[in-house]
Amino acid sequence: MNIAIVLLLALAPSLTGAQQAPLPAVELIDQKLDPTGGQILKPRDWFYKSRSNATGLDWSLSSEDPSKGPYSTGFSIQLVIKARETVKQDLEPYCKSFLEWKQKSTKLVTLFPLTKGISNQGGFTRQGIEVVEQGTGNRSGKLYHCTYSMMWSTSFDMIVITVFETPEEQWSSLKQVQQAMSQFELFGADFLKKK
Image (cartoon, rainbow, N blue to C red; front, side):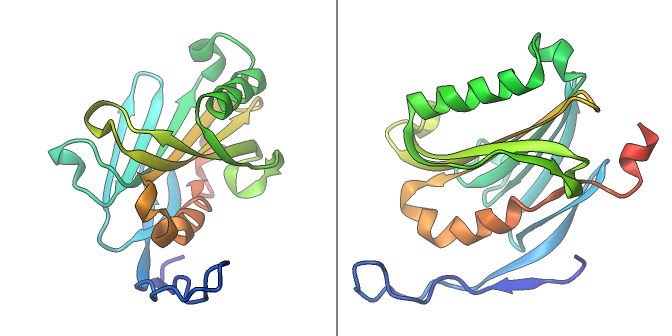
């Protein structure tokens, strides 16, 4: 994936038949996910941050500089290692209960189907949801368009949680960016062999 990709976003008319203004092209570049050796596409001008914590690793890719505070548009990945110990239950029920809670507490847009054995993710099972929800904290009063994805692997005892979020009014211009970013590879070829 070591090439820049220009994503030409929606030039077609809307479902109502009205012509939409052309959306700008977004240049996506390859970003390495340290220390796992994975890869993700991100807009060239977005920020990247990775860190370890007591339960695993976190990555954030955002349009705003995360050193200046919380971002409003971005994609986060959280890898929870020794997940059964952390969540205190079996992984599949835990992940599904989170998605059910989101479905009940937000405006559901789409519930994505369960996908088993995702090869580019080390054989994880994945399910996700797309919602519109109220912002909280310093973002309260705004609607956010979000996708949540839960991935779990009983053979590796890991959970991966991803969230893409943006203010609702920006979603149409970022939907294809979200789709490209959600195709990330969390682990490089040799990472899981070491574990």
